[in-house]
Structures are given as C-alpha cells and as structure tokens.
Image (cartoon, rainbow, N blue to C red):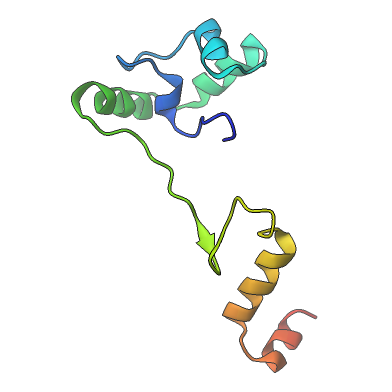
Length: 105
C-alpha cells in the first residue's frame, strides 16, 4: 500500500494489459523476484482481470481508496495502534463494565 498498489488496475497499463515485470519494477520502484511477481499475477482470477481491463478501457473510473476512521483518527495514524483499536472496539461492543470484564476473562 505504501507504494500505491492496492488494486488489480495498478498492475495494468492504460490499455488493461498486465504490466511486464520490468515495467512494474520501474513504475513502482519495487525490488522483488520475477517469480514472486508472476506468482501474484497468476493468483488473480482471470475473470477479475477481464473486469478490470473492461473498466480501464471503457470507463473513466479510476480506483480510489477511502481513508478509514475510528473515533476521528485515521487508521494510518500512529495513535491508531492495536491497543487503541481494542479499547475503542471493546467500549463500543461491550459498553457496560460488568459485561466487558466478564467477556474478556
């Protein structure tokens, strides 16, 4: 995600063709083995690749990743760690201290 790859469309050129390993490496400045790259590509169902290709070729839609928030904190902030998530979700799902203490034992 930190390199901006989170959709199948990021593995394609503007015509919907899967990027060659060298093009992918150059575009995203990622070091991985050729085998790892093609393992990931082969793991994508063909129907999904066709759907993404159709979207690229026939629509102006570009994928957009929405930012997730909990208690007004982005999931990408340092404050949003496991401890924070657990305490926030525990308070939300088990608001009464009696139930919360009973469930977490």
